[in-house]
Amino acid sequence: MFDPILLQTFVAVAGSRSFTGAAVHLRLGQSTVSQHIRRLEVSVGRRLLVRDTHSVMLTPDGEAMLGFARSILDANERARSYLQGARLSGRIRFGASEDFVTTRLADVLHKFTERHPSVELELTVALSSTLFDLLDEGALDLVIAKRRVGLNQQREARSGVAVRTERLVWAARDPSVVEAGKPLPLILFSRPGITRVAAIEALDRKGIPWRIVCTSGSLSGLQAAARAGLGIMVQPRSMVSSGLMVLPTSPQLPQLEEVEFILTSAANEPTGVAAALAKEILDRNARQEFELPFREAV
Image (cartoon, rainbow, N blue to C red; front, side, top):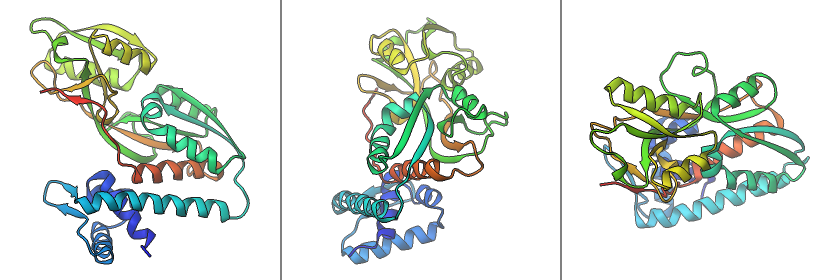
């Protein structure tokens, strides 16, 4: 019998490739995370992780154990949900930024509605700034959206539970869209999109000329323009879609900032249905090993 607590820690480390990241997510000390991994390896009788000062890698046995661990934790969660007494019911007005919906959230929402068929889920997909406004107006109960890291503006300083932090990157069909001596062709969300502001500010700081070739409030519209080779778009690194490649930084493409996805609710702490959905998102995010669908430009 494998201890679910040890499995949860192992999956969190494997998902983030970091003992520190797992400790933050699980709200444990880093020494406790290390102890959990050692105890699991003793229990299994195999080395599961290889760790150095810069990275954490899964061994072949670790790769196999990761699949087993996810299945065990998922079965535990299904049993807990079924046997916990009264079925969860009610309505949840949930808002999510489009990039997170299309790349992260489909399986989470499917599992949540499958486990809680009596819950009425109302989903709003919009820009992060719009979602925060709707939350403030009382039109949403729970939101997952982006915020810029390290800024002091009131909007950016709103409280919430961090889901993940990612660096923004430049993405395009191929590197040929960057032409020396010509303004950078940008594909951007409509105002006041966070990635739009971050890209323009980074270019202006370096004095790099740019022009907007496509603006859309829809991620699918931006991706279509990028796949057509019209220009360059900006996305969190792991959310770049297939058919596009991440372009390396260069004198014409400065390094972009990090953004943070947070869960925030109308109440100080989510309760009831909102709390259950928030837990599902955080748990699934910790257990999932995200695959990157893009290519790296060389």
